Amino acid sequence: MVEFASYHPLVNFLYFLFVIGFSMVFMHPVCLVISLFCGLAFSFLCSGRRNVLRSLIYMIPVFLLTAFLNPAFNHEGITIITYLPDGNPLTLESLIYGICASCMLINVITWFSCYCKVMTSDKFIYLFGKAIPSLSLILSITLRFVPRFMSQFKAVAKAQRALGKSPPSKDPIKKIRYGLTVLSIVVSKALENAIETGDSMRARGYGNPGRTSFSIFRFYKKDIIALIFILGFGIYTLVGSILGGMYFRYFPNIKSVEVSFYSVSVFVSYFLLCICPVFIEAMEVRKWTALRSKT
Image (cartoon, rainbow, N blue to C red; front, side):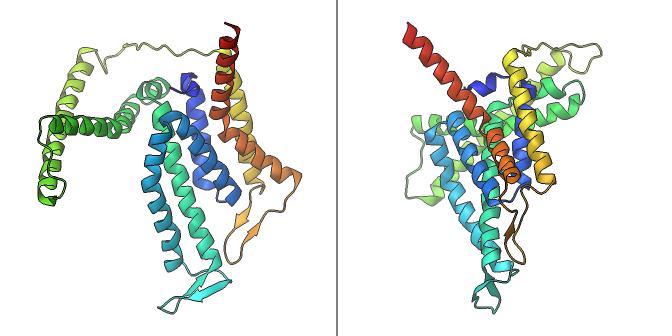
């Protein structure tokens, strides 16, 4: 578990609120590169190198498909590279926009994968359980459903292979039947878990007036420092973008904000915000290294 996950849920949620929100809005190439670099670095800490490389296997085709599909339908821009077979122009602006839009999509997917690793269901319910109890419970169950379903699918598939029921590698019909069998088992297990969850919630008095909930989350000094850090750089980046510090347009021609001390400071603020968990992890590793060297 990364060190950032041990911080207070409010710190984790505000960080991802800023980072994911900015990744969905900022289209400046510098912001996209910052978000991609920091997102992959944080994902490496959360999931490990093997899982990150595995996720890149499907991210790269999505990136290429989105990047080159946009110029086929978007013909805006004044810099014409060539003409497509249907007579429409292929413009440099639409090509660059397609690459940046696909990069933004990859960034959002990467940050959401990090969110699922850090913001567990108990953290989400702790933050919003009293304000919106029903919605927070539904969102918590929904967010944990996919990773739990996938883990159960892998467990059932391993059990089937251990029993010698794996299909031949060159028979597609038997592969499909095998996959449907595993899927049927997993769906049955998911429905059974849903019934058990409902019984457990009823037994614990969910929905009864005056019911309290246990929480182990407390605010410590490190949480206050991290919260000030995230709010400071997050608000500065937000205000800087509103004031035009990250201005960038693709159509009809590419135009960016002029390089100045203020615009550079906004980009630096955004980088420091995104790199915050990696910096915390590096400081923790440095602390443990110093403690081990003294022993």
